[in-house]
Length: 257
Image (cartoon, rainbow, N blue to C red; front, side):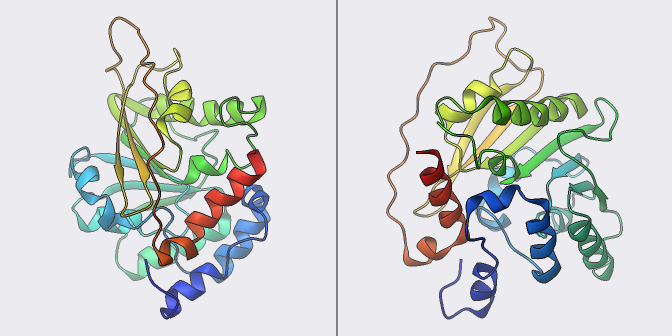
């Protein structure tokens, strides 16, 4: 993450909306992607590469939900994972991503315009489904985080159900999120799903959660963990305070308080 003196950082911050509710507006994203070449939500690949490599093999078929203008697919490709499909709801993001990948010669990566709540793929066709910050957008107007609005829960469950559907029987869903386990577990642990749930954290002073949900590995006794994890203490660096990640989280906390 850069500092004020880094022109790239200044460029990235300039696209943040005045209100977190704008993140729910498709027009906001089309306009942003029209003008912004690249932005990495929740840190870049180097910060969680060690976690990714523990779960994705070179021959894995990977679906990325809400690719935007992230370079995640490119970094995976450089690591030898070539069977990658990226989707985004924004036609602008898809077109720009297709052109960017073509210029770099990454022609094996597919980029499609699609809705993550209604995936256009057959059942059990991916080894890995991954999202980085995309699900968090659904929580922008969720209300009380302990008791999210039904509209929010319905959207999140639609996303999770379709991710579960397109995963192979032993597939893995990876979610990179601000959402703390005591807020995400009630959704991940729905009886509709057969996956187990585990997580790690990464980040220097500001913690992000790296969830790994393994399909077909749910505890045989059907019990759901009642573990509640205390939020990690936050001692933010100057550059963290200026990042859009921090602003995004702060705005949501204020809206839902």
